[in-house]
Length: 175
Image 1 (tube, helix red, strand yellow):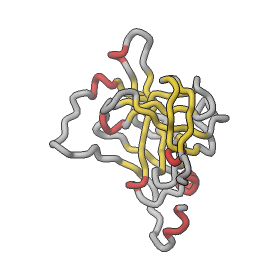
Image 2 (cartoon, one colour):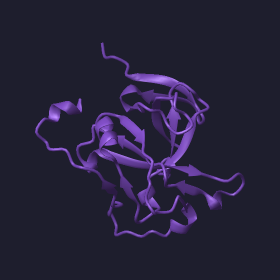
Image 3 (cartoon, helix red, strand yellow):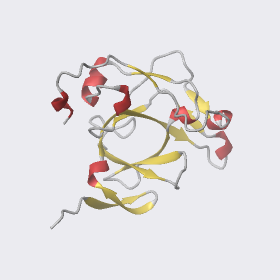
Image 4 (cartoon, helix red, strand yellow):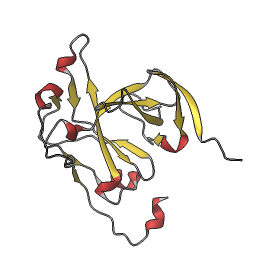
């Protein structure tokens, strides 16, 4: 008999069934939620650019997040050696970059991407970290200012991840 690899959780979006292999472990939690370590990404609506990063254990902890490269044409993210080791990140293609989104009450046209604390997820091993950025770039970007980012059909946003690549000598450490 096949094992059921799903669990039911209460979320900000109501009760949801999630696959256990989609649970992302955050060893340090997230800013303001350091005691929350297990999250899952939930769609708000099909094909919507925003997601909810939902705590598995606390239905009240769900952060609105987005892929910054869908809105911000240039957004360099630096990942230090210690964070890279904790993520077990070998290649930039293994990483998903998300940022939290703040929507002022009653004013969705002024929604902001929070650029100083991107969330990096190694999708190969479902480990995530929030990585503070210390650069000269802006702390926030208004989503509405970047809705007109155009790309050729089928062109994916270019990620600008800065870290030291790890040699491929032992792929078994990814597990």
